[in-house]
Length: 384
Length: 141
Image (tube, rainbow over all chains, first blue to last red; front, side, top):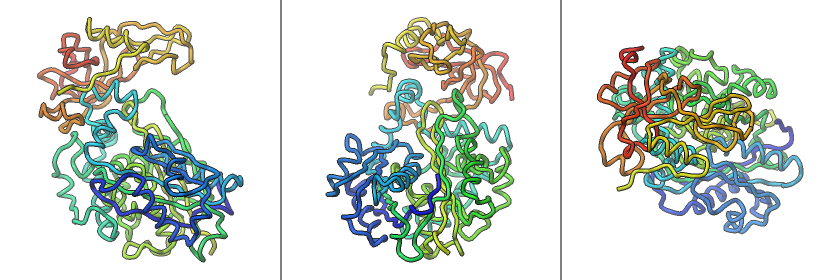
């Protein structure tokens, strides 16, 4: 998908918190209001809502519309998994292009505590609840630690290399006023942290948080001068490699070529990259699947690059989920927000110089052994 | 405190009961396309035929990967305060599954190592099929 006329014209978020101090809809409302303020668009113009959330049910996009006092022509609740929010932006563009809606708010967010999180992951879906949780599977940490071990075994990937992702993201997060994590992280801290699921230790794992993010999709001629963002291409893929339980590749590999060819952009032309960071090993697998390096070669790629916002491969420049906030439903939108913020030149202390083009990925729907769903967008600053 | 248990239904009942009663792992064999499936489904995920037969696994398999899980999710498991050896196993019959490696020598598990169904495991404690190291699998790498 590609659109010359419709794109992103606003972004905003609620405050992020470790434990939810207000209900999910309240965070979503804060994000929605911040988003409209950034775009300079009146509430009366919003006629579409895309919602991504784990904890919103039994609520949905229509009941959120009622809560926000909106009359809607388009209301969709996206797959709760964290590939969904990125997909919701693609679908919102299609809805506006087709004329079904005029201005669509894409919202992602959740309010939760650690107990809510545990309850969610052991009953994430029927396959997990019936065939994994009764084994004391350790949640996503258990599944992704098996994937990491296999990657280390097969390709010689080292924890010292994966740790550079976590350390760089913390460096970025310290320059993002919204980050929940405010203390510097060293490679030694990462390597020697408490064991969670061998070989995963504490700083490999995202800390569940509460909060919400919002993106406004509308005709680009409604954007404030210099603040519009175009979507050059976007794809999704689900259940790539059926039957595999701990695969070393995901759906990004299946659409990588079309993602770049449709966008008309090469890897070298990307100024910043936001990869879905539930774990450094999954960021690494995306680097391979999206073609930044060959399969199995990410260790050397990580050695070769500096990954901070001011480095040779600016990655998750706002700190990402690992160091800014992992807000579940919003977690999948945080990369879109950060990209838009950077392309608008509004990232302050962590601004990537001359940022014009960025890639964002999504990943989610952890089922029997691994994540089923992959998505990605290439975004570019509209106009000159 | 209750450990999480699988929920029996019309599709998985025979598999769950065969493990619980006899220490057998039943796999679904499609009589149309010969695909072998775990976990149980209503139709074959390869060809969508509903003609699938449950047949016992021969019981042997190879470790694709494993993890030593220190932090469980459910409170009941957390209170046990023990680690478990979680594994993904490719059964010789075909399908892959998530399982645990049990037995005193489980710390010798290795990727590529051979495992076999632990038919004598405490099946009250383990409501799903679990494996132990096969004698030939020890110290494999």
